[in-house]
Image (cartoon, rainbow, N blue to C red; front, side, top):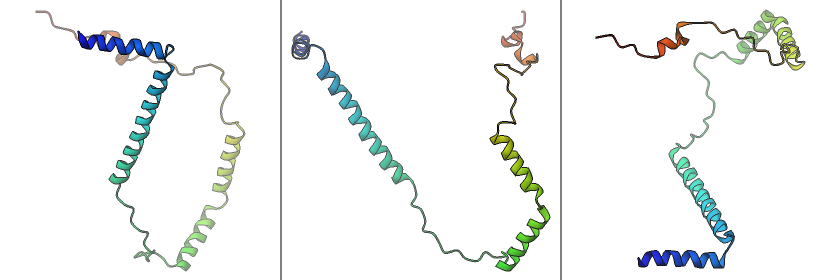
Length: 133
């Protein structure tokens, strides 16, 4: 009974000193944000510890079986001559159509999906049928 009186006495004292509850609200908000900031730093520190350190970049070595510079240039020229300008023209046309909004139809609020009936949507299949005894 004595602890109950102590609790109500504290509540009455708080009601007298802060009738609108601004002090209690500011303390509660500061406590929550302080806890969130502490948790952020704890989790970011744990994340940095759990990631393996990045290996140092090694100098590029010649890969076994890779062509030399002259051969690579010859391959690139052959590919460019073989493909020609059709691929570039197709890419340019696709970009032109996409950027000028000529690809899509204008359908204000029209749904064009037609539902089809199937056994999956049958409500009779939703319940388990018990055999008669």
